[in-house]
Picture 1 (cartoon, one colour):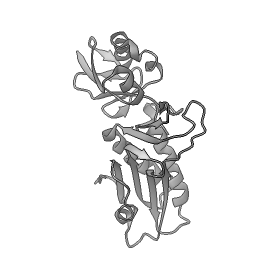
Picture 2 (cartoon, rainbow, N blue to C red; picture 1 turned 135 degrees about the vertical axis):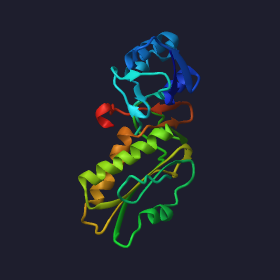
Picture 3 (cartoon, helix red, strand yellow; picture 1 turned 45 degrees about the horizontal axis):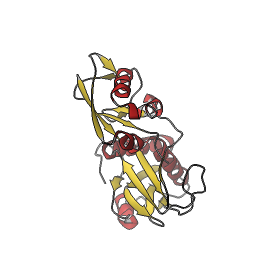
Length: 240
């Protein structure tokens, strides 16, 4: 059978394309697919041991079965608007190239019972001062597996409500494309009736969890080099 694999960030660059087709015998697992991919694309050999795999927008393990028609993606660890009618409280999730309109996002969460909205906003900084990265950043390029990203944002909201039941609204936004110094990159907001009902901790959890499980990557572009930033956290099937 032939399986099409979507590639992101480092893997896309090394393969020279964002999609590849791999032939494996049935029945097949993710491990079989990775072995066939390494054989067909030697340029990916160094990336595959640490690559994450998703099957039908869920994190997959080596023993996960793959079948014809499955949507499979390969990507490095995550670098650090839609409405879901099944969610119990107001939400706003988006992966977008557009600048943030924070007032409009707050409006998605505002209700008569809401008295506090706590938010975190990330920005592009010019000096990273991290080993292996350009000493001075000219701009960032963000890329996302958008369809899976919004599903994971909804998952984060559910996790927040489980930990902080008094939080009544969650917004998560990730910008993609070229972002210059001083532009905002990420936005997480949590709403509740009062400031002492967990919204500060929930917003912190939201941005930390986004960096762990939402498939988004950034490329640091400097004067002489550009480098994809890969995270240390490796999601497993338990993160679904």
